[in-house]
Length: 193
Image (cartoon, rainbow, N blue to C red; front, side, top):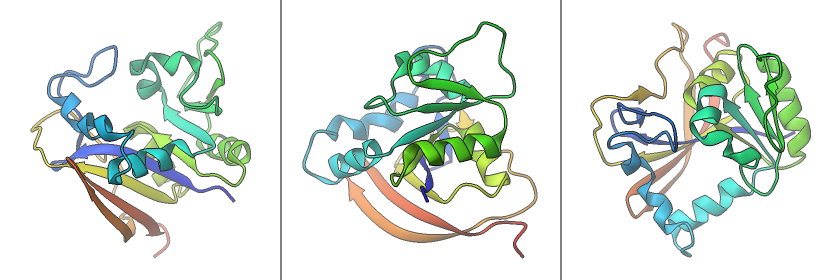
């Protein structure tokens, strides 16, 4: 079965964007610093390796906010893989471009993405989608690209998880220029006490 893997760049103080993540790339003031490691994506080094791994995924689950801030990726996140946009509602006549589709139920979204990905991983993008999948017990792994910067404000990756805790096991650490790539497997969810 396909694994649902969150791939996110994050500042040391937990922010995934700067304070003004407006339209466009959604980076905002100082948030662009979180993605400087991608400048090495074509290199044979660690950052290039991690980038190639994330592009080897077979489907994408994105939160609606992330999808809109990214300009809907013009309907293609990478290699034409299906994009499942987890959203609270769909406006009549709002048809996403390319391989994207809106899904309003978190379990249905995960199931569709796993089926579409086949034996490859499903890439998860966005704080809202990550938190919804975590609360539902559906997220399997997290690949956090930890950036050595303190942004001080912006959008936090984990700010609305609720009282239950989640246990993680660190399974890989790779250090690349400007980023520490940490892979965690989710080993125990709050309801599994």
